[in-house]
Image 1 (cartoon, rainbow, N blue to C red):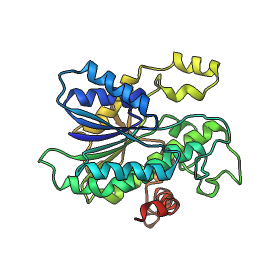
Image 2: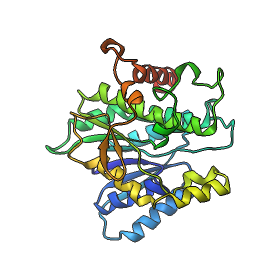
Image 3: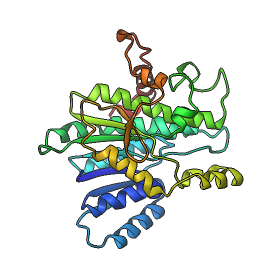
Image 4: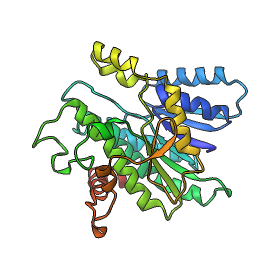
Length: 303
């Protein structure tokens, strides 16, 4: 991938992954909310890899605000005519209960799922056009960074569309996080189905239990315990590198699930079954969730 977008590229897995790609002379757009943090990350990466012929460029985005997501995509499209890889890394975990996005969604669902969906939809045309420019042996990929929580603490099928706003039944912050990450898996499944004929490979993954800034909202004791069980962020980058570059992942198995530290695996069966359309005897939940997301962001898709 000679040109990629890295959301959440100013810290954690995204930062390590950006460094590795930059060391291979790639151009990476570091997409992040805080300019100072992103610029510090860019400076650090450049100082660690002075021999690189690649480039690192910052674009501001706030995934808690869909208007900001649209502006970020527009800014990128005004600068580039190709996109080889879109790495949907950005996320939030266990914020203050009741936290909402600017548009009023549960903060975790909005930031982890709806925002990345809109971003990917806005960039889909350039991804499709890039496929047509690729050299033999190259490919275009969209990577959806999920979590072990997608399997461990999400409802049946991954998403409860009848209670997506939690108005019928409240849910713990942990379940909301798991739901938001399972939502990414469903979007990956549906993106793979819709864009296979266009030649785009889509992959979702559990990058591993990692020592990243996602823990910043956890109580001190829980954060400490979680830290004992976690690995350095670079290990998550290894998982993502497999998802992004492995020749074992092709259009034949696009939509697959990758686990640490780079293995294709089977996700929880009821989540996997969500990808099966109703016309084929499945629940069609991935399609239904995609359609719901599309309706929610429609005004940001219209020019």
